[in-house]
Amino acid sequence: LRRIHYAWHTPRMLGPGDAELDVLADALGRPGTGRLYKILVLEKQLAQNVHVYQGSQQLSSTFEVIADLKSVADLAEVERILDEELARVAKEPITSRELARAVEKFESSYVWGLEPLSARAETLQRYNHYVGNPDYITQDLDRYRKTTADKVRDVAARFLAKTARVEVVTMPATKPVATTGGKQ
Image (tube, rainbow, N blue to C red; front, side, top):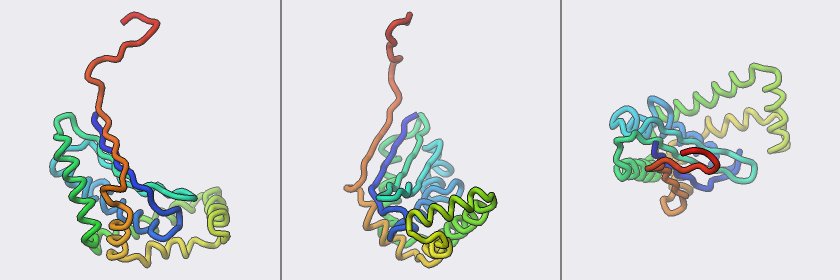
């Protein structure tokens, strides 16, 4: 299948803007309700799947939008839809429902993720490593709880400019690739 993959350089893990981009990724790519997922997969049926995520890392991160196109999909139309929705979230705030849904997702993921003892130990160590405070979970969750739709819009406008992204469009081979050392 053809794949469109956009990526932007974004703030480091736990840095200003990181949580807002997590929220935006959920609003755009959540299966079933995410804007891009709904348009490309459910409504127009141009894509097999859509993935959107903030890949948070220690020194810097990447925000990625990936669409796996159906074989009959018009590549230019999919790119137009992606561009329109990404421009829209940089100009208009996400809805209060999208914001609440994302915050609830992150809170519940934290709670369920802390169930195993090893996960609790890893969480304490991760916060100790990144911020020097193993008891940082409340502050981390507050990054999501205290964000607003306007902050999400402002961070999208700051980091997700069309001119600042890397674009990779993967196309399937049109003919079989010859191998060496064997019969063809």
